[in-house]
Length: 112
Length: 113
Figure 1 (cartoon, each protein chain N blue to C red):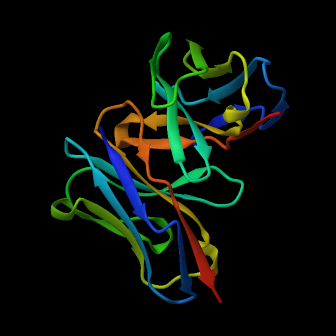
Figure 2: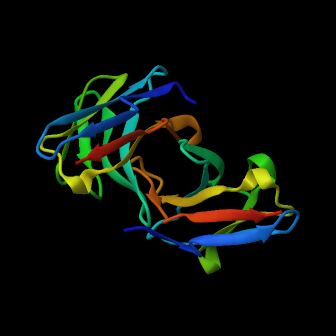
C-alpha cells in the first residue's frame, strides 16, 4: 500500500463549511497528488506537490487549496464546501524509480 | 494535452472467456501508460505499465497489455476471466513528467458465471 493513509475516511458536512483532508505517507516520497473520483469521469487531478511548499494546480483545482509543510503530509482544503464537491478523494504518491503512482484508500466526502 | 478514451463503460464476459478492455490515448510526447484496477469501496491498484522497451507488458493477475504506437492504443487482455476479475478498470497516461496522470472514465468488467 506504499504507506499511504488518508483521514478522515468518511465525512459528511454542510454547504459553506471548510473541510480539510489529510494524506500521510511514511516513505519520504517527493511527489504527492490529490485526485477526485466521480461516476462517469474517472479520476481527475486537483493539485499536486513536488516538494515541501512546492505545489501546482491540476485539471480541477477551482475551490480547492493545498499545503505541504512536511514531506510526509499533503493537505487538501475546501475553503467553503459546495454540493458539487461531493466525491471520493484519493491521494497518491509517485515512486520515482519505477515511474509509478500508488494510491491511498480514499476519503468519501458528502456535502449536504 | 493528453486524453484517454476507454471504449465501453461496461463490458460483460463469461467466466473462462477472453477479457479485452480497450484504451486509446492521445499525447504530444511518447507516453507512459498504465492500467489500474479498483475493487468495490477500495483504492486503485496498479495492474501494469508501459514506459519504454518491450511493447507487450505483463502485469498481475494474468493481465497483459500491448502498446501500439501506430494505433495509439494500449488494450488490456486476459485469456481466461475469473469471477474475481469483476471490478472497475482504468487506463491512464502520463507525459513522462511528474505532473499527474490523465485517466480514462473507466470500464466496469462484469463476469457472468
